[in-house]
Image 1 (tube, rainbow, N blue to C red):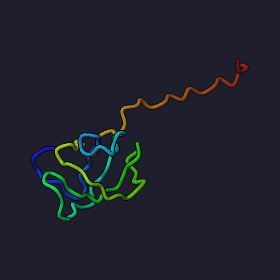
Image 2: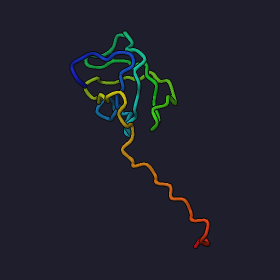
Image 3: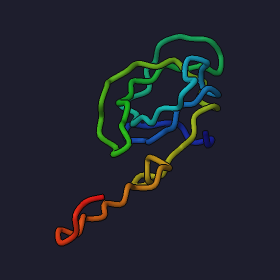
Image 4: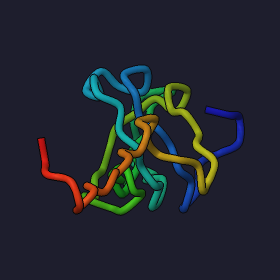
Length: 96
């Protein structure tokens, strides 16, 4: 994560580098940084976990090392998978 502090609205990818519980990375939008007392170089965040479309699917409080978070620009694609192409079936030919 960059040296700038996290703030509400920031998009971050939470990976195993941020905390061992995140074996599979998740995308989150920061709600707020909690001011709870914790260990050095760790913090609690209130976040919305996002799906591939950027919609909130869960609200979570997560315990992470900010150095392990990856900042994501607002408006960036949240998935690396290519969209599925839909090819319409030609109605004049029988399906094979």
